[in-house]
Image (tube, rainbow, N blue to C red; front, side, top):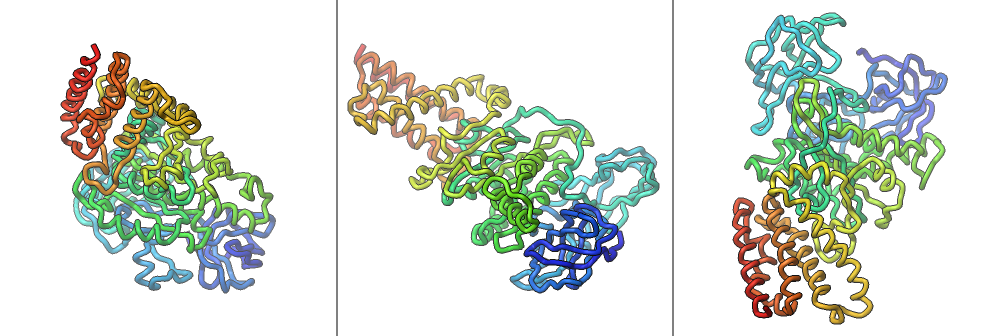
Length: 589
């Protein structure tokens, strides 16, 4: 739509601009403010005044300068070329911005999100004259070596496909088809636009039955998340939230990853921007960026753009979900996003709620996490978005509003522990404070993979860890030496589980990622050790004698010595364990 003057700047309050003498403007309309045409969005209308949150630095903006209306909401461009891209919070490609303005982004730069000059090899799959429906796939483009980009009829459009372009190379602005429907004749191109604050439609939601395998044993075994699930990762400064999300982005079995660096420190995002383009996808041997989109909105960028970056990222994820892909969204961190909400709310002079956050914070959190899920797409395919949001509670206080409100809308809680992080135990996920409500949903999948033993093994080890926590309180008072060997065995088994199973070395080629079969077999060996050792102790054996068995060293080193492709060989270690302890127990009858 054509731009038009809708009013003029009346007052500037940081990232918020009050426009006066406003006419013909709508809520959430995208606008350009002042002579530099700063990008903004209308967030309040009252009489002939409108309040605009501006996504760029408002320094130097003067009252009386014009405000231009775009006539449409803040939207993102969806089409070939997204993968491998690095964008700011309003989907401006950072490499293009740098080429135009240098290392620091200048105000008022307007660039397209997708390259209009690049040509793509288009292969149609629909025929001219056929009836098509919203979301139907009408052609393919090879976006990267890993991902086939499926060109879809935009949502809310359907009718008769009057014509479609033959196979060949096309730019984004080229017309590849014409559609005649109730709204008249419409042109179809390789890309489409969608407002970021509106979730893309789908047919129906699917149940959560398949786990998202992360390769991190503490997560997959103790606190699994299903494809299409939502997780929060809370932790204080230095507990490794970003490390966990980096590991998940690299190793999880999602088809695509959207990584949102929302308000994080510049050095952390620099690490992501430098490392990710060089990382090799361990599952395909290709560059990880071929299936990754990065949204970089650091803490020194305009605060309003931080608020928009979350919606930009989830909308890009929905687009690929609609093609039938499984997408993982890493939001690091939603606390910084909530702080942006708080600042903007304060500038708008709204009544504050808990700790100064706006009263609508829970609603905004719910709107974001609700856009995750496993669905049947409009085209009939299965797609999913798994959202993993980090929370940075000040001082590690999980009772603060962002953490507490987020817990209401997620079903998995991976609490990071400061003491574990200080002890260099990574991932520093607390096995006592964390939980997952997806366990029952994914049990059938795990049982099919593990001969029906996974649920019982998991219950056994959780019981051991809970008993160990109770015994630790006694040990702190009187010491471990006064405990009988049967109780000291609980402490020893828990120690083995912590160090040989839960702790992973991200820099070790073998231990950085663990497949489901290896996790199951390692867990089975540890639970089997406890059962056999307890029987030997009941016969008169001692824990000291058990610890001297040579097989104990093998158990402690099994995560390093058995590669994922050799997971089946762990069955030999289990037999060796049984033989060693049975031989030890036979001495005592």
